[in-house]
Length: 292
Image (cartoon, rainbow, N blue to C red; front, top):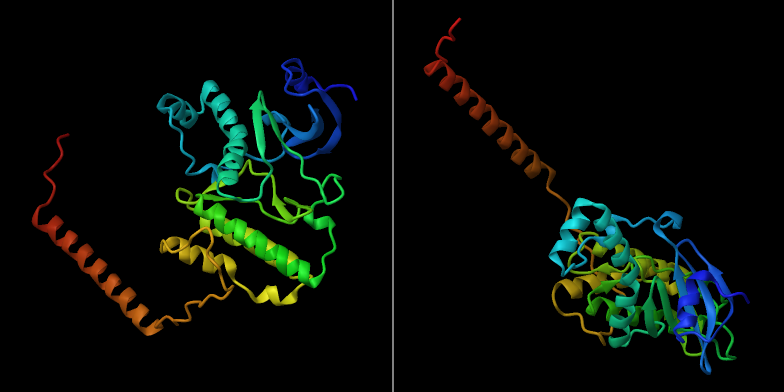
């Protein structure tokens, strides 16, 4: 096929020998199958900010560290330079996450490099060597659903121990190769320790997986792995190889309404006394007459 303009520099530099075909076009990127020597890999070409429909939500970016203070100030002030650097930080987030998670033994595509908005990475294939399907396009047996769910949960645990939460995990962001699930699409990866929405995003990721696999293994629908996982993480007891039960004891304490009303009444009484003291002070120390 004709070489896309964005991939031409990688061909010129010898990083890519040939472009085989376009694999998919999504809300944030186009993905191509490329040949590099004897291997076929994927080239993910990120769209420019004005062409992307996925919003660079502050909710996702909160907590991400920026080591360069000048760049951080520019990004905060939203100057032209700052917007350019923020765009670059967004694009490199997936690359950083892939390297970080691969080192943590999470099953993600192996990254090979990032050049001018193009991410070169491993192509995930099925047992026959064909491009792996998305999880949502696969019909599972009961046993497969239980096994794949356990694998995804273990990878989410390892991600969390590595300080990251996917943030957009669903059956459409997981591929199935010959060995099982492979997590993909991480540009919105969330900093677990620095993001105030981290727990909520973890719950959503885990519950999305529960609901999907629960179609084939209904017993999963009553599990609460997200809550259990976060509780262990907060207490410092979560480890990469932690084995969870899916059980979580929710707080069933019922609020004492009478006690709560007493607290409210006391607060109202204190406020009334404060207002009365202010009025007394005004009477004792009236304002001096104003000159004409």
